[in-house]
Amino acid sequence: MAVPRFWREIPNRYNLVGARCGNCNKILFPPRSICPFCRRMGKLEPYRLKRKGKVFSYTVVHVAAEGFEDQVPYVLAIIELEDGPSLTAQITDCNPDEVKIGDEVEMVFRRMGEESQDGVIYYGFKGRLIKP
Amino acid sequence: MRDVAVIGVGLTKFGELWDVSFRELMMEAGARAIENSGIDGKQIGAMYVGNMSSGQFIRQEHISSIVADHAGLVPIPSTRVEGACASGGLALRQAIIDVGSGLHDIVVAAGIEKMTDVLAGVATGALATAADQEWEVFVGATFPGLYALMARRHMYEFGTTEEQMAAVAVKNHRNACFNTCAQYQMEITVDDVMKSPPVTLPLKLLDCSPITDGAACAILASAEKARKLTDTPVLVAGTGQASDAISLHSRTSLTSLQATIEAARKAYKMAGVKPDDIDLAEVHDCFTIAEIMAIEDLEFCKKGEGGKVTEQGETAIGGRIPVNTSGGLKGKGHPVGATGIAQVVEIVQQLRGEAGKRQVDGAEIGLAHNVGGSGGTAVVHVLRRGD
Image (cartoon, rainbow over all chains, first blue to last red):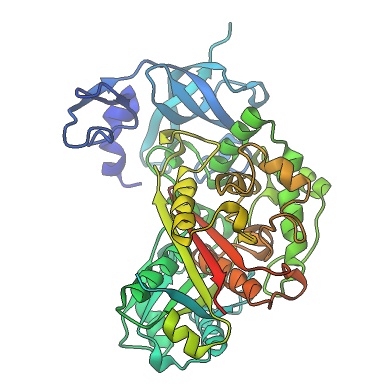
């Protein structure tokens, strides 16, 4: 990935910042330029999401995506955030067998991967199970 | 729009065709379709070529010109159409709109993907570009992974089992045994699927369609012209297309493809038919769960019962609604840009009564359902015998 392509997404990826529409109050993540509900009437402003959610679905990946080969098996999930929107993220710090739909998670800042030995290191968010 | 018919179809062998180039593949399917239609090339007014990613697979863009040139059809207008794995279905729809509008009387709808000129890892990476690079692939999503997320949720909401998903692969492999163009002419068992290596659980290797080289072609004509050219025209009764968010996390449901529901609604309405009227269907089974969701979204069964009806044999040849008689993407193979056209090749052969051992008796109306990516695009066609 070219450096600018990653760099320009850093504010959203590092801070879990989406958008909130001042017209319909919907919270959107990932960020968008246009509110899909209000379109030209929308007034999008940055919104920092609460870092809690629930597992909506998950899969245990054995054949990795490019660049994730050293992480298998890893858990990929769709997490429904408390604020409303959902996102795709890995579930970290767990045994892959223990994840269930409905589990509560907190979003934690993690290293995602790296370009090469001397390239960019990618960071972003993963989910971590909140154990009762 | 005036009525449009399919007057000829052609398909190459599907598989890992290391000795055949992109150009040779496309010419083989095209020549077969032309021969099948009984026309000569001079009557062709335009061409639409469905292709997902020649740039990534053979490092060649601008293939519309290559195809027209090698077919000896320059200077007719030739246009590449892209919608990930729905590229073929979209090319067909563009050709239908072209003929329907009256712009041209005879138009070619082709589809092709040459996927084995790169290593398997590169090919799966190329396919993943049909998903959201910034917010899905960036965090480690693979294409099978996205369908596995749908499968897990489907299991949670409706009690669908891994054995029911396996039953889709078993049926489609059985059908492929009767299709000489199919990549896998071999039967498998539920046990084989269950014991195959994990890809992204709950999906295992035999839940996944393969990487395939192949091309397909259909010749379209106005219905009026078609009746003069052939005794067995197949009419395009309905066409529907819809889009949805590219990423799963931005959708309203994980257990339905809204694009399929919307495209089907439009195609059924245009054709003036109900799901019950369909005699057979080719649906987009890129993964076994995808066929289960498709037959529900196309309303061949109630939501949540796709796994059960598959297990009970209702979608087998001889069953209530035969699905993927060609072997589907799973058994026949999935050269992504060709798939949407190949589905229509099968429907046309079935409606003409030319499907040999996989023939559905008395088939009058057939449906083809082609999906792009994880459901960001869907296109549905309803075809009916026109004799």
